[in-house]
Image (cartoon, one colour):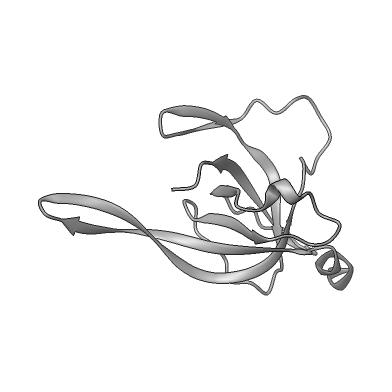
Length: 126
């Protein structure tokens, strides 16, 4: 089943982690590319009421998409706070995904997983 799940990951994402660097007397956040992976953006992975979980990013409350970004289990496990940018879309994907970015707010784990389903919020590109 893992192979079937990964066959649906037609988009390409670049994972970014941030670090801090000094610019004069100021600390500046810098995003460093970590790896590129296939993946797909999906809606909520469980049934229920409308999602009311939010995260504040840049002073703006944003809805969390639970299980919203799927990447292969073989990809390195990202940390909370990393961001994934869509760098290429598959032929059957929504072209508006290209260039969009999602911040990881949780990295759930489970037995018998077919993909790593990350809880994310969409954020503006830096």
